[in-house]
Image (tube, rainbow, N blue to C red; front, side, top):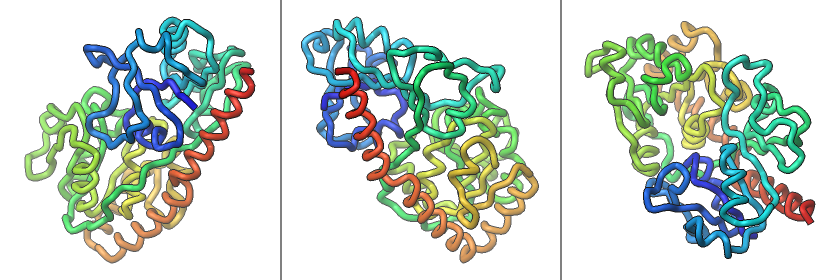
Amino acid sequence: MNVLVWHVHGSWMTAFVQGRHRYLVPVNADRDPWGRGRARTYDWPSSVVEVTPAELAAAHVDVVVVQRPEEIDLARRWTGRRLPVVYVEHNTPKGDVPATRHPVADRDDLLLVHVTGFNELFWDAGATRTTVVEHGIVPPLVVYAGDLPRLAVVTNEPVRRWRVTGTDLMPRFASVAPLDVFGMGLGQLRARLELPAYRIATHEDLPQGPLHEAVARRRVYLHLCRWTSLGLSLIEAMAMGMPVVVLASTEAVEAVPPGAGVLSTKVDTLVEAARWLVADPDSAGELGAAARKAAADRYGLDRFLGDWDRLLEEERCASR
């Protein structure tokens, strides 16, 4: 079928567009957040087609997949008709978390899809229909090497988001081994943390391939987010066979089963785990092998695409 979907979250979208459909991705001259078009740092198939708002008026669209409230009205305006709508919620709620109302709460004209069970539990969607389609990833092309006794973190805007991303915890781990931080918005990180250059290095906005190659060379992957849906970079690290040291918050407690990593709410426990794994490459490799199996079993691409195929077909049929 023809699926209208905006380019919002590159990693999730890269898995989503691997399916058997035709994906119409809005594009505009500025390539701004409402018209980014095809990704430039991810590998997308030729079935992802850029369309301008003007072209959408005549385009055949079977279903709309939106990820922001504004896209619901944009889809109706640009296509000129009402279409079945599936709203994908990627994020944990903000504010008064136990009582946070979702932007599409109490609507009967769409389906709300959460990417984790944690998100479905914590968002208040009222009477809106909800379901969960857990993440899937395109298997990374590289495997864990771990030849550098360093710690890898993948995060975006760690200075602005600070406690959300666990940035304040980084110096405690930098005392164990040097940190390599990958992502976007890293410019002021070392200065804010007041760490010397030999204790932290930043790697700004690498394309996915080189990012995976660089991360896989580090001995241990750190996931320090206090409040996030579920970082796909954590799943990708596990899929490469990396040992992971993870703050036990939100969906991470489901993603990392026993034996596939070290998971705790006690930072001292995680610091000692990082110290152990940096010093013991054999144990790091054993933990990473279990992590790789866990990621393949739960977040495989075939399961993810199969779930989405069924859901999209059901919504298209129901709209008739």
